Amino acid sequence: MKSKTRFICQNCGASFPKWAGKCDNCQEWGTLVEQVGIPETEAKSALKKAQVSGKKLDYAGISKIEAADSKERLKTEFEDLNTVLGGGILMGSVNLLAGQPGIGKSTILMQICAEISKTRPVLYVSGEESAGQVKMRAVRLGAESDNLNFASSTSANDIAKTIETSEFALVIIDSIQTLAMDEISSAPGTVSQVTNCGNLIIRAAKATDTAVIIVGHVTKEGTLAGPKVLEHLVDVVINFEGDRYGGFKTIRAVKNRFGSTSEVAIFEMDEKGLKEVKNPSAALLAERQNTDGSIILATLEGTRPILVEIQALVAPSNFGYPKRTASGFDLNRLQLLIAVIERRTKLKLDDKDIFINVVGGMKLNDSAADLAVCMAIASATAGRKLSEDYVVFGEVGLGGEIRSAFRPDQRIAEAKKLGFKHAIAPATTKDKFVIPAKDLRETLIKYVNEK
Ligand code: TYD
Ligand code: MG
Image (cartoon, rainbow, N blue to C red; front, side, top):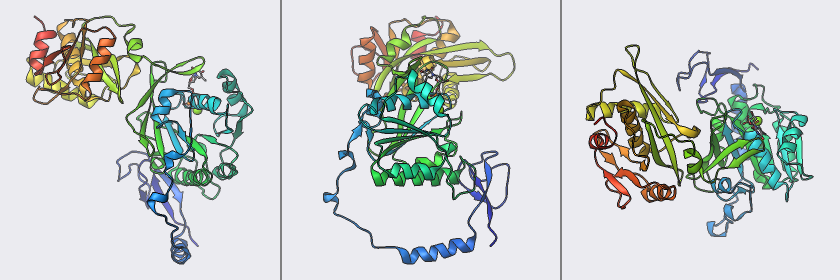
């Protein structure tokens, strides 16, 4: 029987009969990989067999079913991480920890193992590092315990079998990209390997109520290479983000079948591993120098208020086309805000390069950062500082109007706590602390434009 070759896009999973440089479905370049699939006749006979082999479902009244969250949760030593997970790692849940290489995934998992293996048996499986390497890290992080076991393996079959023994409360798999299933010929990390290995492991975890954490590497652009398909299969997806060289790193849930996705945990790496940062605002503002172009934004990370410095640098463009760069802030949003400033105020920016930096490696995901970014740009252009007692928040609309922000009370409370005197904030915010801002032009003229 002739087996059929297909080309599968590793980004979106679309399948093509011929190879091409660009995927027609998702427009990504260089993502098609050859895969030898099962022959069509075999697939047809499998379908026939499946039609007769099914049994009636074993259903039960919903009121009689035990809720999933009534199960035990394994607590990590990190309080905020437990909150992100919805109260700890749920027994029987499969969790995907996604992040760029080098961000600290293996480190935090070893720290989690250290805590949980104090009371429960844990297995750490690595397909990337040798036993010796993992041991070194375990010693450094103080994770040596009789309950913590290590195996080096890249076989999904073996790992699933091991999970099925029910010997472990928690199994760590580092990483999904290294795993392969014997029955599948394609290379590790391809869509079919990732999906099938994932399914095999999920089944074993559910059958035995074992908690599993799977590591998935993501590319620089933030997409889960390969494991994107895994996101749909697992219960919880947590993203590890930030700068791999210093700065703050955040862990947030992007999917959680057993909890909310609005919480974040903030970490810092030192020689003893990762540490939770309990007061990020104070740490972020510690090195502040009040210059022009520097604005303190009262933002939210999940439901947590944080004060963070936004810096703008504005310089004349050398070439006809002005350069715009943003670190920690969405570049498209920056372009839009620049257009709004140009159209709604008299500020001329089309001959200037603009650079925006969010201090401390934070990645803003908050529309209320708009006003602070606009003020930073205006302040840098005019060379005029904003008084250091002020924090800023508010969304800027296309008409230059300043719109209300989510959870203003928490932002204000955090600013008060850190000794600020006023907040320049949307006029709808009712608080004595707030200096109401209605319109972008008025606000810029009043606080940061040239006099
Ligand atoms: P690692 O956890 O191996 O990253 P990942 O598994 O996500 O690829 O480690 C990331 C970096 O952290 C590594 O380059 C070394 C550094 N590091 C520390 O600074 N302190 C520590 O205690 C450890 C274990 C690692
Ligand atoms: Mg690693």
